[in-house]
Image 1 (tube, rainbow, N blue to C red):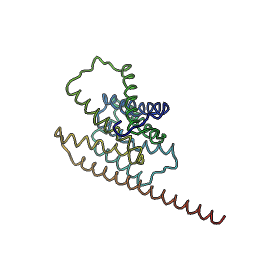
Image 2: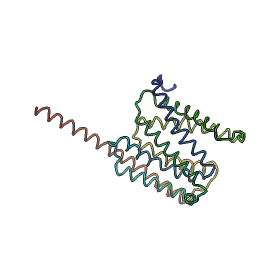
Image 3: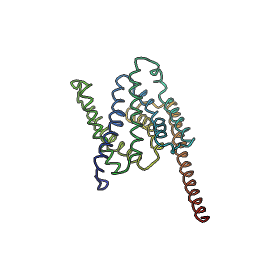
Image 4: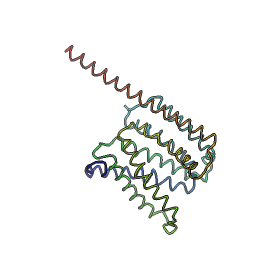
Amino acid sequence: MLVQKTTLGGWANVWRQALTGFMMITIGNGLVGWAEQTVTSGIAALIASLSPLWIILINLAVNRREQPHPLAWAGVGVGVGGMVVLFQNNLIQLTDSQYATGVLLVLIAALGWASGSVFIKNQQKRSHPILNAGLQMFFGGVWSFGLSGLFDDWSNVHWSPQAVGALLYLIVFGSLLAFAAYGYALSKLPITLVSMHAYINPLVAVFLGWLILNEKVNVNTMIAFLLIIISLYLVNRGVQMNSRSQVASRKSETENSKIKTVNV
C-alpha cells in the first residue's frame, strides 16, 4: 500500500469486506446501473438521496445509543427537499407503472449501500480502511461479473472510445479516489455526516454538465444548491452538539464516580 504497511486482518476480515463489497458495489452500484435502463438518472439520484435516511434508521436499529440530534434529522429532511427541487421534472416517473421495476431496483440499491455503510462503521478496525475499500471493490466486482454473466448479453457490448474513456474515469475518480475516500471517512467521522455525500454528488454532476457540456443551470438548481448547503450545515451542527453532549455526559459520570469514591 502507498499509505502504510498493513495486513489483511485475517480471513475473517477478508470475508467481511467481501460481504460489504456485495452490499455496496454489487447491490448499491450494480442495481443502479441496471435500473437506469428503464429510469432516468434524475429519478435514480432522487431515490438514492434517501440513503442518509436509511443509514440513520439502520444505524439506530444496530446502535440505539447513537441517537442523531434533531438538527441532523432536520438536515436530512432539507437535503431530500433540495433533491426534489433539483429533479422535480422527474417526479412523474414515480407514479408511472412502466418505471416501477427500475424504481424498486434503485430503492433496493440505496438500502444495500446504507446497510454496507453501517456494517463498515460498526466492524472492528483490523486493517487500514483504504485496504478494506480495495477488498470491497475487488469482491464487489467479482460478484458483479458473476451476476452479469447470468443475466446480461455480453454480445451487445461495444467498446467505443467514449465507453473506454468513461470506464477509465469511473475507475480513477469513482473507485480509486471517491470510494476509497468514503471508506476512510467512515472510519474517522460520524456516519450521519458522511452519508450526506448523497446530496453532494448530484450537484457535482450538474456542475460538470454545466462546465463540460454547456448544460443550463436554472433557478431550481440554485434553490437546490442552497437547500443542500443548509442541510449540510444542520447535520454538521447536530453532530457537533451531539459530541458536546457526549463529552459533558462522560465528564459528569467521571465526577460522580469520584464523589462516590470519596464518600466510600
